[in-house]
Length: 305
Image (cartoon, rainbow, N blue to C red; front, side, top):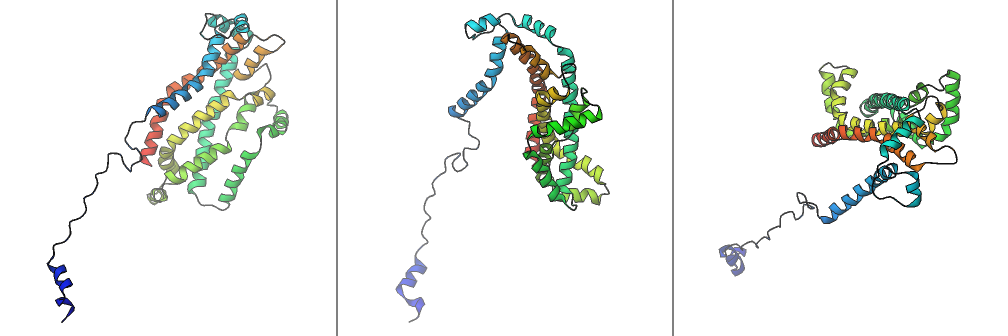
């Protein structure tokens, strides 16, 4: 008798195949970590708390700035008063506000454009070009971020004095034309967002380095350029220490001019905080105008990536 003639084998050949076990239906969203589902109350609560904590300092400054110094000394105001415009007139009369505002706009605008341009060029070179010593130079650039800014103030001031630039806007603009953080940020962004094959295709089409950078790197880097420009403008606008050292009170920026409001033994906090609100308004206007374009650029870059 062969193996095929055994009862077990015959039964296996004749018996119908077993039906598969019924599969459990997956609930919508199961195994997808909540993709497509709306956030719950906890998420909205945390977002509201974060927004409230971010807006409260500006709101409190406006509340104090719209009252009098006597009211601030007696009680903690919770609602705005009616003295904001009177305090604003006091600020405009006490300091060279419009000159300081113009200086801040010029310094912040030039520094922002320069940092975006040079950081994008250097970031593209470090990300996509092959040259000797590239990694060592990149490490050197990153290492400079570990040096505190305060350590370079004295030698930098000596250099500016030898050049005869003290008291001029160039003494603030030139040392900040490019930043190590900007180069590092653009390099980290461009190294992944631009495929090497795209750069090689542009070269095969006869494009030189500058044309490849303009037609390949710049369109891909626009979201990162927008973010870098916004943060650079904000950092240049709020810079206080170096403009205070090199410019002096005759040609101040807006931040250094506001420090003149609290000199002496008596400090009018309502006037000081009114000046702080006036100095913050240009940043709020910038965020309001560029916020939608910034988010659109970020989402466009994310979709393309």
